[in-house]
Image (cartoon, rainbow, N blue to C red; front, side, top):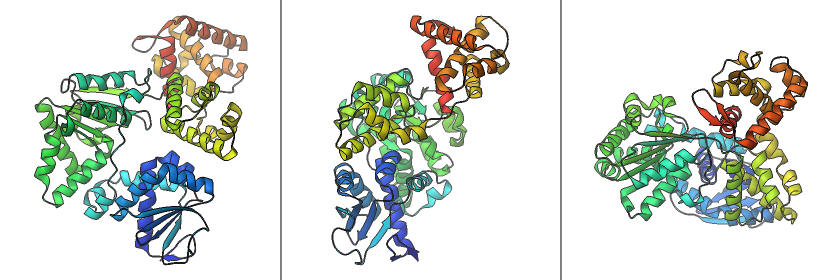
Length: 485
């Protein structure tokens, strides 16, 4: 027996159902929003076919009902097998809670995120789970993101261009792999390709599926003698889009099926698009056969969005949410939160909530107060050795060269840029920066900062490890390495 939050005894199977419900909700709303709105004060009450979401106050109740009803209903339908009646109430309202029901306090967001991750990282065990459990974990159909809502910048321009190219000449650039960290826009691009393909009247000939969905449907087909129809569906398309490719690692029977599916599509010059959280060179667990097929296509990385791109994302998110966001607040959010779009979305959700709760308009002062903790936890601590490593990696140098006395552009330009970055990303004193980079004086650091500012103003070119680049692009590449840790 397991004791629930209100002191009732709950069977282990009931606890598993509730855990599955929280996991399904977290999967649908995203970890950041789940962390923000489904904390310890939010409770779940399941009685028969009735599901009640308890909130700590009327504001929370109304917000959950207005913004998450659909996701909660879909999660409950997936886990329970039927759509329940969903009610939102303030804790303490309504009928006596002692009725025959199950009530469990929402788990901390970190635990919920761990559960969600573990569901996606099962290896061989995933391929043998019961069919009923597979049905319960089936993800919902993704929302139709579009190219028009994708904010383009240097970090994602190549991937965006490649996504449009496969629509203009399907099969010519196949397969296409778009890779990058979580939240940089890979799924947005894949859904945009799918949406555009359907507008081009491809209809059922264009299929978008996550790797987890593909695995689940394949295992169901194996158990239910539906393999011919499964193969007809996925091998008969003109465009197959598969998200979260890394999920297939270690799933041998599914990888064999995927390999033959990709072979069939490529042989008939049809288009395959993948997305993964790492480049192809790091996807060796997928097996040499599939990796070799993918090497014949295009690989496009998507990096962390730079400031201008983040500002564009913030502006677009604000429009979607109907937020009146002043320019200084937009720049503040984009400048202080340097992660990914989901982090920015979470910040705007928090801003909106605080603005409504305090009944104050969104101003820079309110944003600074509301996001202080979020900014503090999101900012990576950067040290001088980190900057040295990132600059040397980008410019193809040995660390000793930044501290040498060499005055050639090959060494002096990266050294000045390193000092400029140290001023931007650390709180180190001028004397400390100068001492680290070759025992130089604080006036040398000031001079280096002015030189780099002048390069940025004039668009000066610099020599990187294997090509010439503008100073803006060089800074972007170094910061991408630096902030990625």
